[in-house]
Image (cartoon, rainbow over all chains, first blue to last red; front, side, top):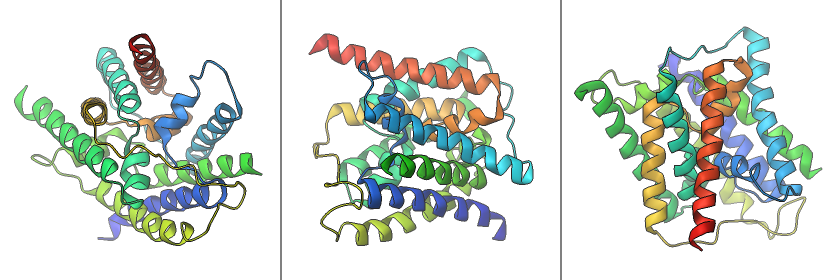
Length: 137
Length: 138
């Protein structure tokens, strides 16, 4: 069971981040929202704040790499697959107003029925997709 | 000060993502592969995140306002509409195809892999496309 301790701790850190954002700035830690704010036609304080958070994500991962050399090399993948996947994630999170952090962590913690629905939907379609790709094609 | 909170919040979040193993798309796809080689790591990540946030939010929302701003800026839409569902379904398909959602993908840019940059670029393009489509129809 201790092999899952890093996952639990990492998850709790994510929770700490979400709480900090809400306690101090009154904001949901929704990554897809921050990403979309980068695309605003008229850059504002919101755009800057989003860029800061996203930069923080990169710094945080980099910090772990410097601490214990933990870095991930993604598996060899077809560029077309990567592009299609990215497009769907970007399009879908924009249309559905959230992703695993916004809906999955923050939304569920607010007891939002919308977020519960969204979370169940993307979990289901994610599971179905992996099933089809790995076990049917 | 608010800006510092965004930066620090992001750093803690990014560290948590990397520490938990979520920046590895294999681990995410492993969780989604419940009919195959099921990897339950993500359950612990979500569990840890939800426990802290549920409890934290419970106490935070007892306050009449956040610390550095006047109001809690919470989503007001309570409707479960087709945009929510279709958006979530599409997101899930993309998530399952490669194993990245927005957070881990951005954090993983730190590893300087061209694949990750390609994914994030495509993700931005997808979001941009969706916003353009909304503008042209409204």
